[in-house]
Length: 272
Image (cartoon, rainbow, N blue to C red; front, side, top):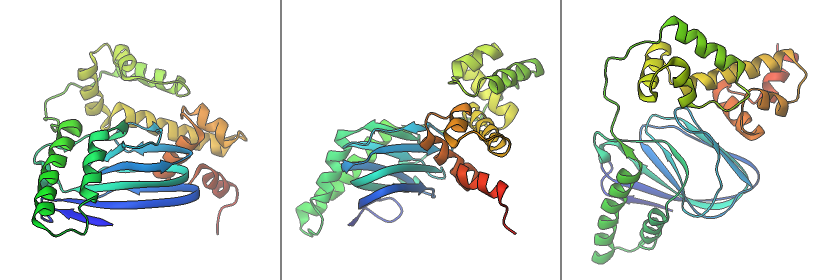
């Protein structure tokens, strides 16, 4: 079922989707509009979420669980034994003005789900009351999403770069510690800077965020181990610092284009 709330340029498009798949299921999202997915009901054995710019990890599927994918951002999720129903809200950037949305996965939002269910209850109705109700709910949904998941775009400012000594200390720490959890506060301490200033200086120096840089290092380490060792995929994922085998497989496929197993097989048995 699909409902359009408001105009094409400034309205919210709502789709209601049902999945009933016993095997692994992968959702990949990328587009020019913001997307908010809300779990309505059902179960899934496990769910891993990956963002190209944002938090990654395991999510506990449950009613009102929210997955926010900002416009022009990539995200993917993998679930097993997914027998579920969820709603997909698509918001054009013009709807929320200069504000953008931040990537979110795993947050429960019962109020958002309640409003979505109320919208679903008006499907097929054309009377004046239902029309006015949909208009009211459209504005309420927009303001609610903007209030909880919106953020002002980062203003451009002049940032210092990390000096060569700080760069070397960070690289030594990262290369030696990829199999452990790496947090921003520790990296900032190694560089001798406050967290906010370090984040800007790092991006100015390496042209990427600390999180993305660490993820790149982990993928490169995994590729090297896949091509030079006989360790299992699970062992390689753990050695490269991924939280679980499914997190490793999902992230690797998003970054490299194939699964770790397929990457290793291609190296061993290259196609002609």
